[in-house]
Structure formats: C-alpha cells, structure tokens
Length: 182
Image 1 (spheres, rainbow, N blue to C red):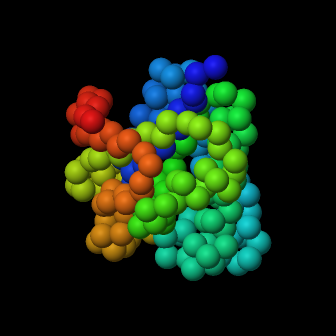
Image 2: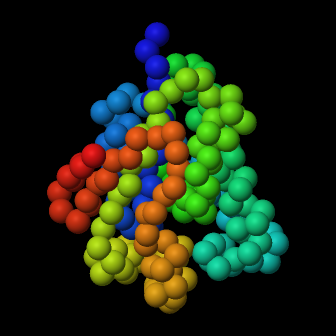
C-alpha cells in the first residue's frame, strides 16, 4: 500500500483556497475536507445560541477560545480516519491560529493517530488589494467584519508565515491563472 498524503491548503478568506483545494483533491483522488462544510453549521448555531454574531469570528474571543479549537480538532480527527483507511486527504481551512506553533502538525498527527504520511502545505497567495476586491465582490455576511476592519484583518491574516515543521511547502500565486511554485 502506498503512503497517503495530507495536503493542507492555507490562505486568507477569498484567496482561492477552495478552488486550489478542490483541484488538488481531484488530481490526487483524495478526500476533500473543508472546515466550513464540516463544522460551519454547528459553529453558526453555537454562536447564535450563546448570543454572539455568527458572522464575526475574527474578533470574537468566545469563538477563538471555544469553537475554533473544536473545528480544527474535528478536521484533524476526520483526516486521521481517512489516512488510516489509506486515503489521502486535502484540508481546506485557514489554519492561521496555529501558524506560530512549529510542532502543530506533529502533535495533531500523534493525537489523532495519523499513520505515516507525506504532508504538503499549500500556501495560496494573492495581493492585498485583489483579496479585498474579491471579498467585496462575493458579498458574504461572514466577510462583513473583515472588510469593516480591513487593516486589522490584513495585518493578522494576510501573512502566511507558517512555522510548521515536518511538512513540505508549496506556494500558489492565485493572482493569475493557477501557478504552483515549490
């Protein structure tokens, strides 16, 4: 049996993560796990039920302290289940809250019993003004806070300075037609 791969597609909202992640899943016959599809409805319900704005996650301490960790634990757990079946996976999520933790991937792999696998982190990059324009054009409620607090959002989420060890990194310039560099 071949060793399965884990493709972790990261980038800010509107960068084209989903497009890149879905293309990667198709090309590698891998399970596609999108954090928002896996956990989004539950998170929205939990935020509403606790009196929080379901569209504001970036500035919401309750979300960051309680729900965000559960979202990523769930995603990593489902990834582990697929990997143990010999199935490669593509994870589509920003992961920004964990960039500063060099051992994040190794800890997650151990905690969720990932078998030996190759991990590739795909950083989807797009210039700031193009990203802002994409968020305006798509007009989603969940982007309202980002646009209203653009400088703060870009300062926190625009960088893809990921310190993870144990992975190979590829950069995708999503400004023009898909260009993979690595």
